[in-house]
Image 1: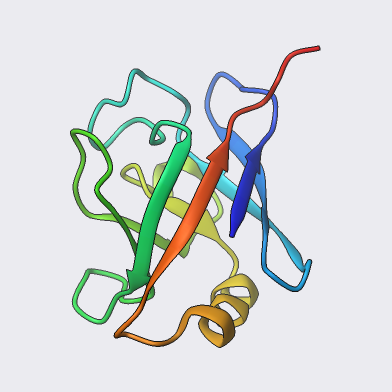
Image 2: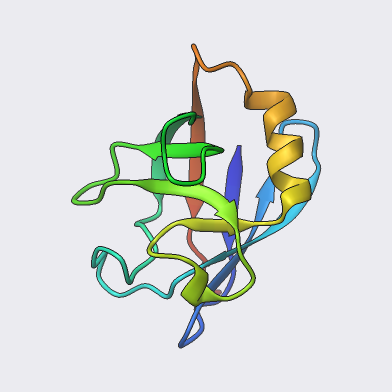
Length: 117
């Protein structure tokens, strides 16, 4: 699964999440604030994620984010709905569940930052 982030904005980071079948969904994160816990989006890079049945929102959890914990995918419509998590629609979460619903497996997430040309 890939998240391609758009051009940074002062108060938010927007992107597009692409599932293995090509479906695309909007993402919303906090702005980049040097990876500060609870107030910044996470660094671009490759991560593992898993189906989450124990966290606050119990959808999906991003694993091994440097200097961060409890990064989840969940619903929200404003950056303030996140404490560093990745916000998506309920439709997106349900589509992700179809591909990544096995609690015994770990999956791969690539987050790409906006590239200036």
